[in-house]
Image 1 (cartoon, rainbow, N blue to C red):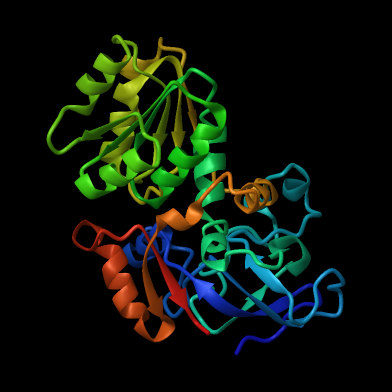
Image 2: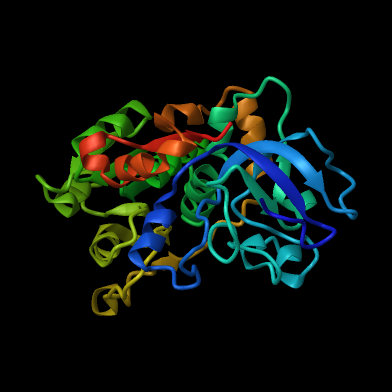
Length: 328
């Protein structure tokens, strides 16, 4: 049972959480800041159980969305909208402090790291707003400067890639091309609005994208996997003047081919989600303009969390996208 550590903290009784690809990267050793023994998880919804003396906008019994990013709202980075680099917060849940894959979780900076859930909201769907939807939108779509009529290529049809696909359609791109090795995930991408899907285990994605774009490449290429091979593929897909928006968590070095890119006027962006878009996305979901529940494929109880990890980690066999873990 966590305890309040600061007057700005809250203790939240977690009702639903999920597993993220970042959790798998942690288990692989790609995130050295997460030490052995840490409770994982940085996504979820729940009910406020206790608040610190300095918390005035939340009270016991409030239903809340837990942001994957903890932000004080006052430091220099927070004032610049870079909540992920908050000097006393950031990406700490399930990383530097215990996370949400538990019955209760301590949330630092509660007033600026929790969002009150409106009555009647679909709490399963809102779990997707903790991380993957703002991540796909901010790190992929916004950083990639998706525009009306543009061509977008998304490398990786996992949950983050699909979240990028869903939110890219806010800006009416002419083409959204999804690239992956998993036929099931490509089928889901087609259902979610991809104009073309390329199985990179069967076809040459570079040749296919060049054919779709009359030889120019994609204006925006979103890397949503986090391995060297996919980052290098993005460099081959980008059009002159285009943008490579990296979203994936990279645990080992990846080559940058400046010998072929130095004169192509491209930009490469990196970002950790700041969750500045969460209030907007929450309104969009409530208005029925975005259906994040379509990303949920499996459901488990907290007692079966190891089975949930096995299912999520073996997505090629299980066809898992996002799993919901109910704790209460």
